[in-house]
Image 1 (cartoon, rainbow, N blue to C red):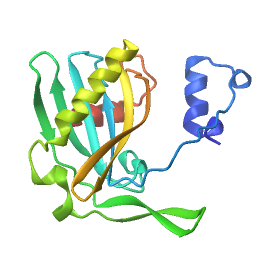
Image 2: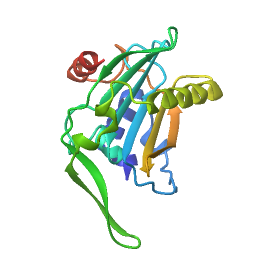
Image 3: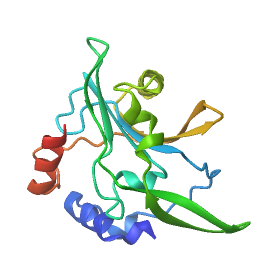
Image 4: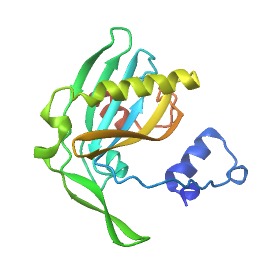
Amino acid sequence: ASLFKTEVIIERELYGIDHHSVFPGALIQEFIEADYSFGIHTAHPLTGEARYLVIEVVQGLGGGLRSYGCPGLPHQFVFDKKTQIITRTAEADKKLKYVLILFAPLIWDISSEKTNGNDDIFAKEKIPGIVPMMVDIALRIETLYGQPQDIEGVIRIINDAKDIFIVQSLVQKIISSSSPVSAKEKVVLLDYM
């Protein structure tokens, strides 16, 4: 289905990729009911500067990171690889999160519900202890593949134990002046970074 989403078709057109030369893939993996979902860019997503690593985190399932159904900005942490410190943090302003609703085995749906600021570990501390672990994992993945990565993952908390799961890692696309991103999107991203 994602092979024919509007944004995918537009991107193929912009990059001159023949629609008949691409084929869909199927990813089969265990579903992890996430307390938090995150995306990590191991290079600055706007400038491509390898010096900066950017982490974005939301409560709930990963669809909440960029979905119109969960408007607002995620928690953000910018790590400077040169100085080895987090140089910028921003607290999320999302009011909704995506959650899994299980009706019966193999019968489920995804819904949204209000976020809970009181239970949000990323809002309680300026730099929660799990963030350095996320940075370490991201740097190891980037080293393994030898180029900037766009990493997606989840955090599951059971009895105060925080487990990090990497869902996927892809070569990172850098948004530049020649990228097919609207001026409005670039302004939002620049303001946010």
